[in-house]
Length: 56
Image (cartoon, helix red, strand yellow):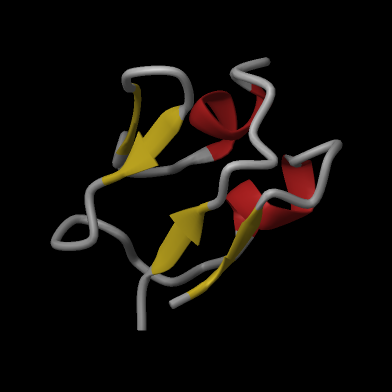
């Protein structure tokens, strides 16, 4: 099960730097996770200061 970024995202980029496979990129108004590339490791969720990342 991949992670997703909710509307609580403030586009700080903390998550993108923590993703070991580069599955996170800057989207329109918030960052986005490529579900096909996501390893479900949770490192992005742990790095998010607003708690905007959750499992789908």
